[in-house]
Amino acid sequence: MQFGDYRLEIIPDAEFGLDGGAMFGVVPRTLWSKVTPPDNQNRIRMNMQCLFVEAGKERIIVETGIGDKWSAKHTDIYAIKRDATLADSIKRITGYMAEEITVVVNTHLHFDHAGGNTTLDERGQIIPTFPNARYFISRDEYEHAEAPHERDRASYMPENWRPLKESGQLELQPSTYEVVPSLWMETVAGHSRTMQCMRLERAGQTLFSFADLVPMRAHVPLPWIMGYDLFPVETLEAKKRLLPQAARENWLCFFYHDPDVPLCRVIEEDGKLRAVRYEDKQDGYIPGE
Image (cartoon, helix red, strand yellow):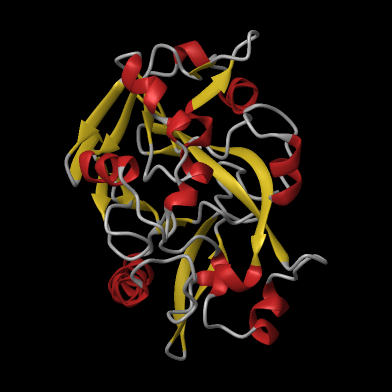
């Protein structure tokens, strides 16, 4: 898919499941289960949808999914279903090998966003998945990940970033920074105080990746906020600011955890916001199909 003079591709990492109650917070099960039916363990089906951006000589991966370092026990707990490694999916969809990726960006270091930063070699040693890439993360998020509190400690797994520091590939960034021209990472509080969203502006269009602020289409309604969020009122304020702007300005909206239709437009009807499937008929590209 072309976005101005940049190439974009969606790279599905793996399917997994989390507790539906935790994913929808105070929203009653009778409501959220109508749009995201749970399994017999109350888990809802989700995915990790990474973005590939080719901008001139730079080949960028935004987010690396849940990774492939999981034990059989945790694979079962999180209902992880994987058809291929992230590196293999990148090669199949983009034509590039892992060694050809030049930049990796994480919105934050939770295990389902940064798990594919590293992988296991044939000896079972943890190594960078992308050996020639620079890895970008905000300094604030890195410092929090190194000293998390009881509320979110389980979301951080140091094996997803410390090997990158040891290899000299980890580069800490400010709260707002430009990866390549017109591709910005900006800190948006709510899920945490240090998570970032991605904004790409090219050829008069805006693509906004909401990361865990709005993880799926089902989270577009303003009060539908995850129980995992550390600062849910700040999530609400950010949604009230960004989603109406997305509708007014016809942004492409990227929902990282949506298992079926990660790329959408947001529209407002009768005072309510909802996501609709994006279709680029000229390019013949319909995400999720």
